[in-house]
Image 1 (cartoon, one colour):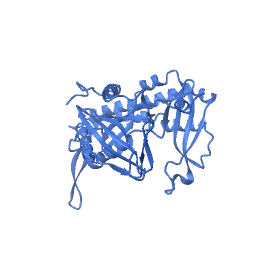
Image 2 (tube, helix red, strand yellow):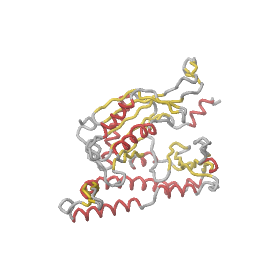
Image 3 (cartoon, one colour):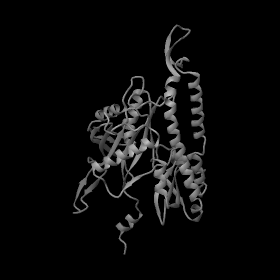
Image 4 (cartoon, helix red, strand yellow):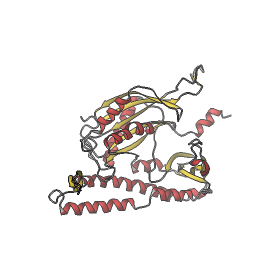
Length: 388
């Protein structure tokens, strides 16, 4: 007889791993004008120092989010070369429960004044002269720190510097090819919200419905679906490579200058650069790169792939609002699931068989950051990531 615990584990995917996110910075109104992360904005700020500043300001204070009935606090962080590694604890608060020792089965009651905090790790990798950096977050089960770090660090830096700090899911196409080799589409699932409650502030935000389809009809789509996923990923990565090429031209194309208004006031604003700073040849190269980037963006999109996947699901869309579509690949059973939603690329989970100690996890993130930088055509700094 199979125990309840064995049945549970049989249905679970690997519990431990990490997610990777690409970081880039540009002025809100000039998304092609990428900034070098070690010297961004009019004041030449260093993103690594700005991340460190936000973490210091956060301190080790316990913060409580009553809207989500959870709390969190920063346990520690350390700067190492051009990276920062941190530990943060988060979990439910204000709800009666217990802390259970799973070996002795002894428990300690947790009342409404107790928080049950679990530890998660994360890291920022910020090359000094690169247009791209990376954030890694440990994933345990389905939980991680991405939402907290985006809100507490990236968004705070954006608001303070008036620059757009983008944090977007990332994985190399070759990683996806290796992950999906020998696997086929097993299931398509859509997560939806009933329309009568999706925008009702009196209803909890996570009220959802899941509808799934599986079978031979999906298996027949396997090859085409993989090709479309790989194409989406490769076009996105090629766009990142082209943005590296156009960034120096964007920096020279416009300069700050004075404009005298009729009322006698003088304002400083971006103006077209003089020809000695931005030549005719520069203009031609810039236009060619803009055309190439626009062409990459006009190819088949994640939204079109999402719509095609939705066509296999029997849903009355007049009654529901889509949240996301999940696609599960595997051999005999679903093993790997990724999400298709809007214009975001699928998010890959880099999995481990168990929870890694700090040093092996850091070594994995060191190696992955170097692999990512090479993969998108960015120069790999000497002694990375221990450069000063």
